[in-house]
Length: 187
Image 1 (cartoon, rainbow, N blue to C red):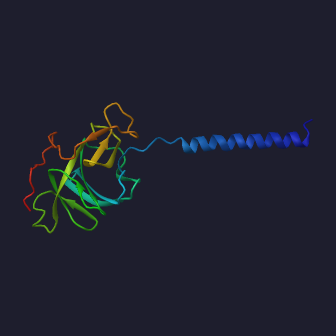
Image 2: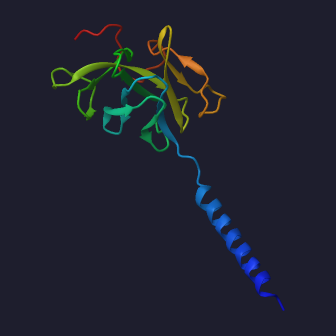
Image 3: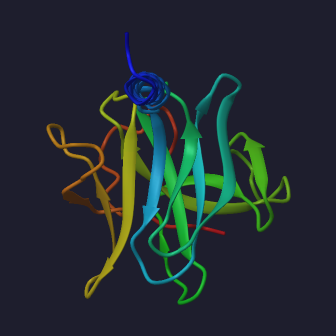
């Protein structure tokens, strides 16, 4: 016969093992596949995203990324190879931009189409291209250095949570799908 204190110890041990196993099942969910942007600057940054949706080109914003924080711009497994980003430093000014023009506005927006932005009452804003290399998950880091803002993204063999190479946001020589690019903005 088992004594009372030994029985309590066995019950407590069984309860702890059950709780531990339940916790492992609960926390063992797979990592989400998202397009994330991390603000590694000392200022608040506003971010807009552009991509080809089912209905054609689409731009949307604004995500506010405080210093040292990340925001999910596109939730779920990435369906496209190319995404386009515009980010602005809300405190010091300046922007991470490029020569791929899409429509934006000052307030929260979702805009379909990239043509005739001004005629439709929107702003015409230069985005830079992100080539996700057909990955389902991508993290981009906005950084600042002595030469100005820089963008950090994952390399082909690097851990997506620890990107290590810099991408020049003004270098848009990569394929642009069928969206037009221009070297200067003629607003």
